[in-house]
Image (cartoon, rainbow, N blue to C red; front, side, top):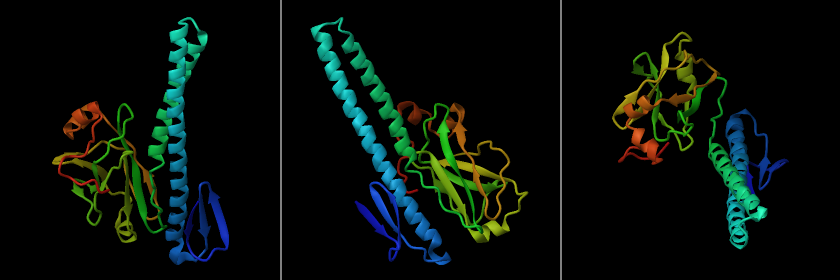
Length: 237
């Protein structure tokens, strides 16, 4: 059992297999404490999903082996067909759990009332996430000064956390948009009107079409299921 202390304990928040010790230390450490709690709970969920996925894969192997054994003995044995169908169902459940486990790795930043957040997922038209894209916020045609680009992770998730200073300077009527980059290739995807102000959280998911992926040099990578990160670039998010 993992135990992550946030201070002297006077209360417990449990989520198997992790137990988190919680102490209200006031406003100064509230965000840090809440992030630690959220991380512990998310980590526990990720582990459980991974274990469930492994169990389904093990079940698929056992059901397949037994179904094939019965079929060899008697091709008309209905039990063989039922077992093989069950094996396919276990494989499909494992696939769904694999997707859920990937989504459970997403960490949405906590936002103070003076900050702002623009976040979302980037995928292709089949639903496959697009990782390794540099995502930046632009004002008109120029990158928003004072906000560094972020990189989409393995789930296609990105999060642009805007500081209190920058959020205070944003005009609600500003012409904001997103810019995607992959190596030397860039794309400004069409989005609905974006506006951000202090304390606001906006979600902007992107579905890239085939021609947009090609413009970013990602067509071949996605067709073959290979890593979409450009060669020679780091994977740091």
